[in-house]
Image 1 (spheres, rainbow, N blue to C red):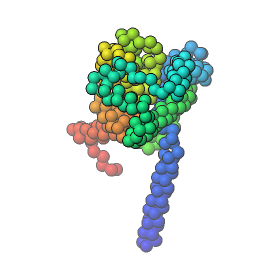
Image 2 (spheres, rainbow, N blue to C red):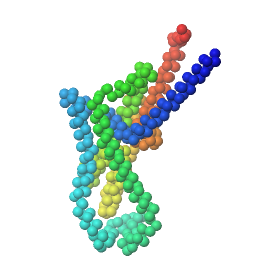
Image 3 (spheres, rainbow, N blue to C red):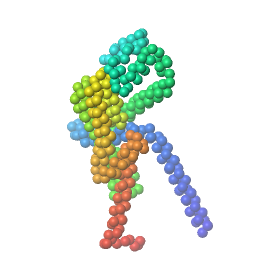
Image 4 (tube, helix red, strand yellow):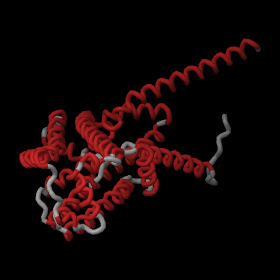
Length: 367
């Protein structure tokens, strides 16, 4: 009896050690892949949202999926690069003016503040006094504002680095999504085999469908919100009669896609209109820009939840909002998938309980 007890204890210890080693392995794999979560997120968004257009492109190319993936990558990269090409060309046109202005400031100091800025309500007098101090003695004027200036520069640098990083992730995500689409249904075979082995065929298929519905909902919601926000913005720019409407619209589409939001375009436009003395235009841009910002914030979770297929609206809505608050951009997928899988498991458990409690159900006797 004693050897049997020792053998069972040894087996228990070995099982615990194996589980701990597997847990350590999973943690290490998570640390390795964590850097690529943003890339995978963009890849999933593009692959799921553009799967049907890609299949039509495959039919046009005679089912040559590799050729279709190359064309798909070139087109998407061109769309992503378009805002930056337009920005660089616009900056190139005004580079000479900026250089001449910098030379004049270096030789003659800051120019007088325009009257339309000094006459702004509430803040006009404060801006005029600070500007005059900058003209008379720049060093004394900036004393006491070191912390605010450093904080502003830090936010500008970190914000610029964040946008640059999101741009790189977006470009890499396009390339990865092209690989996923070129591979076709074979991409999910390893995951399907693992889940079927662990849960059985029916439960594995249910969980896969729930996860795919959540991913599809997030992907369609993100892309749909970007299209709607850019379309609304273009209408507003057209009503306001602004130049570079297509440039601003392309930048807003990209910023909404990478979850930065349209504020970085609308706020400078409002400030520019107020500085130039166009009060009515500034008010219109502020009100319409607020409408676009509200639409971006409200429509995104609604579109995501509505696109979730059979999953309840509230499940996906809470998953997206909670995941976004907890983990940022990639959290939309994490939260939606976690809650959809939890809901699916709970619903499956309830269905089994209902079947077990039916009057005609015969309990198993264990024989």
